[in-house]
Length: 376
Image (cartoon, rainbow, N blue to C red; front, side, top):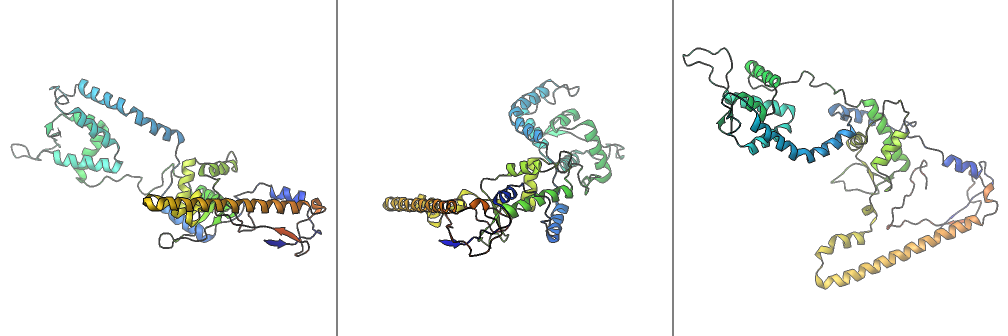
C-alpha cells in the first residue's frame, strides 16, 4: 500500500484538466529524432530504397495463383497450333510439360538473371565463326535446341518468352561484348517510385513519438541475441491501426501519404526495436515452464504437475480479485473526498491523506507509465 497526500489549493480545475488530458496528441510536432538517429536512418536509406506498393497489385498477385492452370492450358494450346516454320514439326516433337516449366521459371527470374541466362545459352548454341570454305562469317549464326532436339528460332522465342526486339538486343550485345553482364543505364539511380527520405523521416518521427508517449521499455533482454533497447507498444495496437492513425494526422494534400505495406516495411527496416507487446510477454515463469514442457511430462508426473498448475491458477485468480478489491476501495476513498470537483492539480505534497494501491499483475498486460508524457 502507498499513501499519497493532496492539497485542496490547486490552480487548475479538474474539468479543465480533463479537457487537457483528452486533447488529441500530435505525433509530428515534437522534434523527437536526434541528429544521430537521423544520420543512422540516412545511412540505411542510402543502402536500400523502399518503393511504394499499390494495394491493388498485391491483390492481383494473389489472383495469379488461380489463373496458373488456365495459363498452362493456353500455353500448351499455343505450342500445338502455332506454325513456327516450314517444317511445322519443331514444337510438336518437344515435351510440352517441360516447355511450360521452362516458360514459367524464366518469368520468375530477375532481369539481370534473365539476361545472363540468354547470353549463356547464346554462347553455347552459336555455330562456328568460319564457313565450310574457311572464311569468316559476317553474321552470327545459331543452332537452336531444346532438350537436345533442334528447333527453329520462333519456337525458341516462344518457350523462353522472348520478343523479337529483346532477342535482337541480346544478340547485338553478345556480338560486341561477348558474355559480359548487361548494365542498365539507370543503374545506381533511385527508382521513380522510391519513397523520398523526407517521407520516410516523417513516418519515423510519428512512430518514435508514438513509442515515446505510449511505449513501455523492456525491463531486460538477452544481450547475446539482441543488443537493441526494446520498446513495447500496448497489445491493443497494431500496424494497420497505427498506419490509419498516421494517415488521419496528415493533411489531404500532403505528399507523405503511403500504403500500409510501405508503412510496415519502413517500420521493420529502420526501427525494429519498437515492437508490440504480446500476450506471451506477460506470463510468469511458472506458467511458461508449464506451457512449454507439457510434451516432456511422463505419466507419473503429469497428474502432479496438472494439480500444481491448477493451484497456481487459483492463487493467481485470488490475487487478481484482491487487486480489483483494492482498486474499488481506492475509488471509494476518492469519492468520499469533500469538494472533489474543486480540487486543482498543482498540489503541495503531504497535504491530504489518501490511500492508493499500485500492484503489478503478471497475468495481465498492465501498462505502467515511465514518462511524464504518458497516461496511466
